[in-house]
Amino acid sequence: MFYVNRFVALMTSPAVVAAILLAAAFAALLTRRRRAGAALLVAGVAWSWFWASPFTYRWLASGLEMEFPVVTAEESPPADAIAVLGGGMGCNTNEYPYGEMWSSADRVWHAARLYRAGKAPKLFVTGREPFPTVQLLTDLGVPAGAIDCLGEARNTEEECGRIKERLEQTAAPGARPRLLLVTSAWHMRRAKLMFEKYAPGVEMIPAATDYEALVRCGWRRGLGFRDFLPNAEMLFQSSYMIKEIIGYHGYRWLR
Image 1 (cartoon, helix red, strand yellow):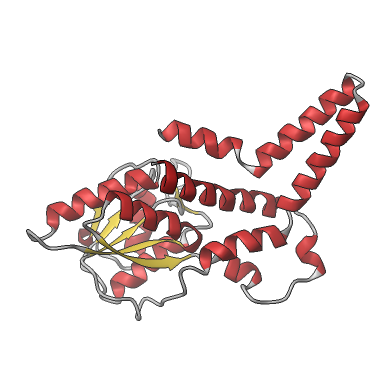
Image 2 (image 1 turned 45 degrees about the vertical axis):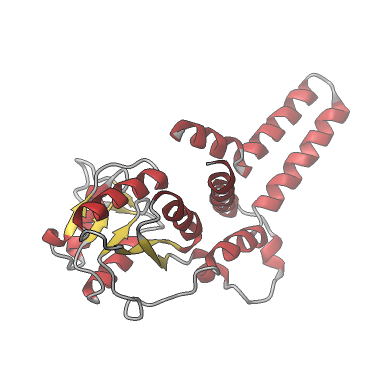
C-alpha cells in the first residue's frame, strides 16, 4: 500500500500533470497535429499558471491550517507523551556531522518547547531519519533519556502504528493515554484522521506548528496583483497541499 500511495501522489501532482500536458503538446506538434498540439500547449500553460500562483497555494494551505488555530507551548494541555512526526530533518553525512533542517523543522523546535514547558515527561521521535531529530532535540535542551526513538517509518500511517504500540506498552492498565501530536499545521488534519482510525484508544491532542501559509501570505489579508503571478516555488508547494487533500479523502473513504 505504501507504493500505491506514492504512485497516486506522483500521478496527481500538479507539477507532473503539467509536465505530461506539455510533453504531449510538443509530441503532437512534432507529428504535425497542430490543433491538438496547440490545445494541449494552452492547457499545459494554463494548468501550470493556476497551480504556480500564490493565490492557489494560499487557498489550499490556508484551508488546511485554519482548522488548527495557533496554541502556544505554554497554553497546551499536559499529556503522557509528546510525539513529533518526521519530515523536518535530513540525515547527516560523513562530510557534515549535523542534521539538515528542512522547511518543516519547526516540528522539532515545537516538540522541544512543549517538553521544556513541562507538558509531558517523554518525547517520541518517528520518521525515516530519526537520528538528526534526536540530535537537534538534545541541542535544544531535551535530555537524551526522555527521548524514545521509535525506529524507521515510511509514512504517517506507519508512524501512527508505532506510536500507538509504544503508548499501549507504557500506559497503565485500562487508562486512555494522552498524546500531544506535533506536526505541520497543513499536515495535522490527515494525521488526526490516522489516529482516529488506527489508534482510537489514544486521546490525540493536536499541537500544530509550521504555519507556512500564515507566515507566507497571511490568512485574511487582501489579494494583490502578485498573488496571481506564477513562480516555480508555489507550483511545488501547491503540489504538497493537493497531496495532503487527496491523501486525507483517500484514507477517509477508501481505507
